[in-house]
Image 1 (cartoon, rainbow, N blue to C red):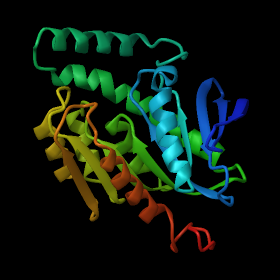
Image 2 (cartoon, rainbow, N blue to C red):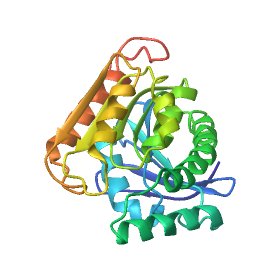
Image 3 (cartoon, one colour):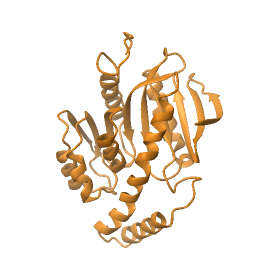
Length: 256
């Protein structure tokens, strides 16, 4: 990991951009919390860190206010990373189907999502290796948002992630439903009931498939961008419960 820039935001949050090999990323740490602190890994759709930055930094500021570090890495084929021909073709096929008002086929979903999961998850794990080696970050780790299939795979294979908050708003291959049955960590799932780009019934079926004993579905009226403010507060409470307090891999500090 190599830090390439740093700045102090107006609320005291320390923002550092980094590269992990050729992968860009951003780390935010709280300005006043005693180190080391838990970490929330912020997922995002494959639109590029530059485009997603306003939403990511807003989420990171909320995490820092609760005493957590937050970090994110660029997805394969997105932002300034090299173009990925297969992903570009899958996105083009998806756009054509949606513009024509046609159902999005399972073949398109598989081609769009499964290779992304296979590439993104090991990169996220490598990022965790580097981030958790920093003295200011000690775990435990939460995962928030992003392409839900990436989050599902991480929840299955990455033992350092102890809780996850998912946004039910992306296409999910049928094979990921089987992986969802292997997820056992606490989950907080947000569903926008009128999300025009989401199959509501598929989202409900996926929630039912998760194997976690503790899983909560928060469904709100409105479209993809109509998430109410209190939904973010509920998610913050979820991470506060699971990233603080006594238990395996948690710090002895009374604050956590």
